[in-house]
Length: 451
Image 1 (cartoon, rainbow, N blue to C red):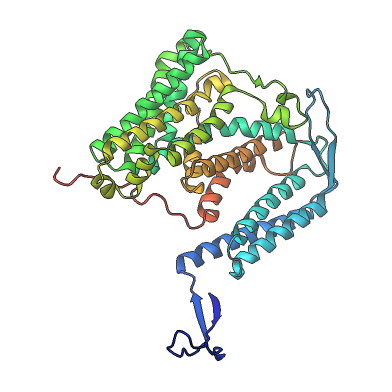
Image 2: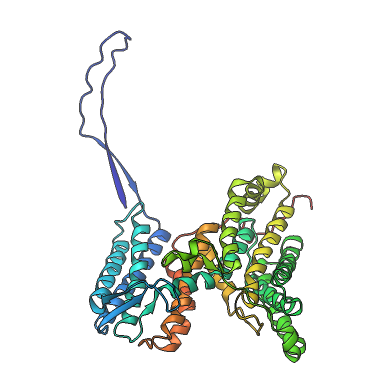
């Protein structure tokens, strides 16, 4: 509860325009405005505070098992310019990070943080948890933790998550819940793998992936917008259909002819002249595949479409209040169809990453739940394309970190490292997402009056 006090002054006017005004008499009365925290806000704050405090206590406990120094390599063995390796004392670093995290959690629990302080405290706690955990895992190891590989791999792994999150943002901003991102990924990966294997052309593979993503999006739009099927149920059905059809075709068609139908060319990094030669940031940011650059451009494009065009205004209108949008002449069904199909384009590109963007071959369930992680990024990003992309990068960072730590012989169990990306997703959505409100009409079919 917050209280704001305003002094109340009283005075008298003579009633004549030319009469001098007397000085107002001072009064000790005060107007007190009190803001009471709602039950939902209190529950969200205490949950977040308890979770952050728990992480702080966990780091404090791990600090006493961190022996020696933690080393972080800023360059890998193949970089032309070798940067120094940074060494920090393991136990003190983990202790400091644990204390920072614990103080942030206690700040949430106290209820005395207002304005931007909760966001700042949450950011500091997140950074402290990451640094503290890495310092604990790398302390006393024979090999340093490869920072450049971590960041470069983060961008690569986050690419399909960013594209999938953009698909989810477009759909949900228009009022259609897209649980089918996983299925769109899977079918697009299959189409890209087969097309790339047959034609040996990466552009053709990307076009095939986009077509597959749009077809799956059209299936979602047909049943949810035209036939008013429950959107969540339809998304689950599409995911099951995608897993079944790709698994069946893989067993019956691809696997028997894997030499011709499952050997697609792989994208190679494209260095940007000049920028790619910068120390540290050059290889990390400016020596990526075309899909990485395309994902970055897609974030800007979707932001511009949603917030700087008339079409984007229509999309947001039908997602918030379709009846009002219909009243002013916006075709709700057509706008939702367009948004869902546009989302299918980005989901198709995201699915292509799993074949032509990485391994060059398709396997059953190759997407391994990345579509659901992209959906979590949409929720954590508050249905905003830029914030959703940042959340996707966060999940990509965790996945890459789990892969890097497995090579350092860390004390963390290998099973925990495999679970880490999905565990971070569950914790982030369930405990750290806070109070969010999606588009008001998201998940609600619209039926025009008189039809």
